[in-house]
Length: 248
Image (cartoon, rainbow, N blue to C red):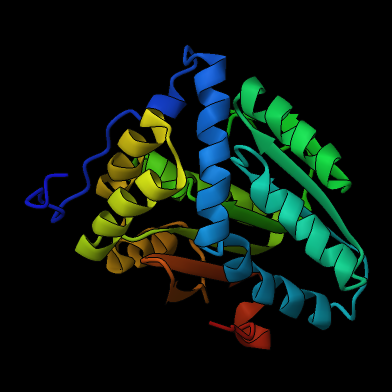
């Protein structure tokens, strides 16, 4: 690892897992590694308090949730599992551009015994076929150019009442954690290389705030959480009803 790599500016480069021509076996191996990283990073745990707070405000009426760019489906599956454990009526859907990732995610959902509806969707070129009460996104924004982040957030805000987004922060600590974590938790060279590329392409907190503002997310709330990530929460009626409660 080059510890002297400059992180003063975003360096957005193509990641191996974003290549449509990636070998399917390598892709699945990488997805398994990312699942372990998600568990160690408590990715779902960072989202769940906000989702529970939304359910409380809705008096636990049935809610629909979409996890975009779901990859191997880890977050969507875990959210469905947590909702079932807490007796929450949550209809979970998840989408991704990759057929390989979606097939893998469907297998994982069936193995976990939870109901998640998976479908293919290109976040940059297609319109969502329907609206959802909640839209979640984890570790996706850093793949996008700034203008595409603004466009995506603006589009999603028109088709949901609540956004809950978690992504990497571009920090020296995050860079070190990415190097160590990807090697401890995965044997995949794809994960090793992409992990560092991801941090170099990530946003700082001020950059994330600026892009959310440009997207028109009035009342968006930001927090940092382990491991060197930020969480954005936005509600359509945030200004009138106050911020959601957040647990760290």
